[in-house]
Image (cartoon, rainbow, N blue to C red; front, side, top):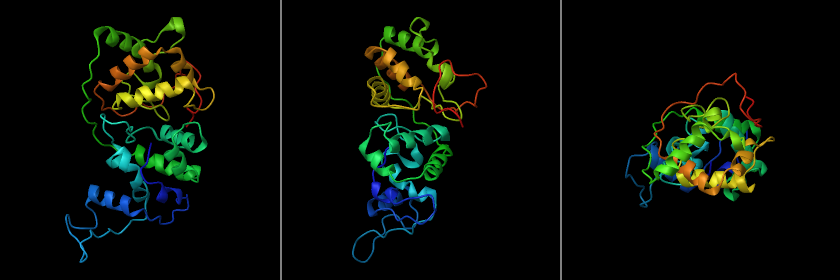
Length: 257
């Protein structure tokens, strides 16, 4: 998750104190929610009045929404990923990865640098609890050959290369699995390509054993492009699958609740 205003979040901690957000974030959040002022109203000097800030986690994540969209819903035609409805364990892990340097993004790392695990869990829980509809996928051209190759990798994997199917971990519907495996649908193609590429190059890492790093390095660049495109044009919508008693086909770190 990427946020557009680091000032407020850098000051946040797990103590539950009121954290004033910046004027730009407050104004953006006010535009989105309409709370605290009448649409189009102005003060005597011609400026729009700032609304009264609430002392809750929904207020403190307003900066996140500047990039990730209202309620973390995002859209499939940009770069930033959807946060709404993702398993809380997955979101918490990603926040820690940004904070601790396993994922590289200067703005996210700076935003989260001083946040405690408890505060990151609170942020993750907020977005995991958001249930908002998905927008329709963006139509993207995909040849019949690439479509068949992508669907085969997603549904069946490649035993000869010890590549498990995406569906074995991320669920048959690609909606993710509780408590810490994300859904793969409703994400922009460019984002999927970038993340698989980052795993392949070592710029993105997870807890050891880093199964996604191993899988991405076994894929060829054209396979990554085909799989990302195929996933991005599927219709999303379901909730993450419940936790499975069956172990994942390869060992993966960070999946424990």
